[in-house]
Image (cartoon, rainbow, N blue to C red; front, side, top):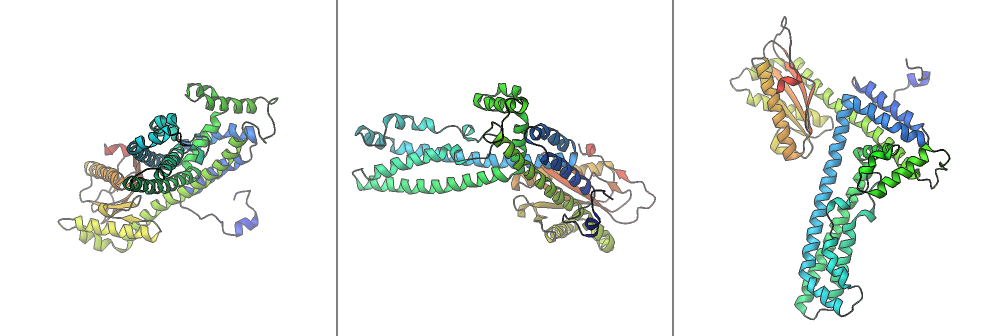
Amino acid sequence: MDPRRTKKDAEEPSARPRLVAPSPFLVDLVDRQFAFLSTRDADRLLMTVQRVLTTLEREPSLAAILEDFEAEVRDAVAAYHAHERYMMAELREAFRVERETFLALAETGLEGFDVAALEGYPDTLVPVEYLDYPTNEEPKWDRAASRHRLSKLRFWVSSARERVDTVEHRARLGNLDDKLNLLREEHEEAFRAYRTLGVTLPGMARERLAWAAGCLNPSRAKLEADVAAFREREDIASMLHEPTKRRMLTNAPGAEVVVQARRDAELLREELVLALGRTLARHGRLRHFAEKMRRFHSDTLEKAFAARSPKKAEEELARKLAESYFEGGEIASHALARLEPGAILTVTRAIAKPSAVSAAKVLEELVALGASAFAKHETRMVAALVVVTQAPRLVFPREVRRGEVTILIETLALGRAEGSAPLVIQAGDRA
């Protein structure tokens, strides 16, 4: 019994849901690491962050979850970058159409219509890589340069609309003003969603923690193009390592970094524990489904898979597996064409004559199917049930990761297999 638990703790059920092995060990590992981190003060907090991250990254299951967190960040950033490129292209085209109108008004000396600003406007629609917020802080509105460019163009359009001569020109500017209003609403919605992800995604929390840990030794940052960022790291390092320069956390160089690091550490801990529960629950549901089929439906399944073509039986079993995940609170589908974005794809494959060759072929097919599901529907999880109708019994790897996709595998052995040694299929056999 854990000496830290009191008698009352032992008698009362734990508030944390109990998960199948090896979840208790992993949850305890995560909790212990971050509990220790939470006890560190300002300088020791940042000195301990890198060790905690390294410990997590060296555990295979946690490393796989952290990779998923990174993929989630990449997708969010890519989506927002695509939005920014679209915004910049729309603003550039709108300005091109009315450029001469704006310049003519500028020549009259109208307030707000500066010739230099108008001539330079297309060049201020900067490449999207300059619109990113720094990796050490959450996204802020003042980082959204495109919002400023949009506001400036809206001012020029609305002002020009009141001063042009023809009805047709006023109508054209009115239509453009309406379009810019729609773009403004669309952009603010996109940026608010982006900012929300920047605050809530565990992958972003991990990146900010890594940046904070890098402040201890900023020498590598000399290669950075942003000199100001390097100077900021130097100031923080100086505060952390030189006691005579260290001040109270109020207004000290590293104050905001430490506060942000504490927030990010708590977010990353919570998300890791939740992800462990989801991942292991998916494994557990797949194994539970296979065991239920073996115990209660073996005879029916043997007849179905003994048919000349087991395809129909495979599809029916995959459909039941999708229903099982749905009953467990997850969205899944057995049909690739009907997959919802990010949902679990359930697959069943039968092997009538088990061998290393036939098993490797099935494994390759599952990997290819997972890649197709990711490309079409961003599905990162495939739950595969391999039905073996004859001896020897096949033992597949518990899961296979290929790029962005994780394939969970469970074997359902039908018929009698006593006396035959299991045939173990290693992850390398899939090549």
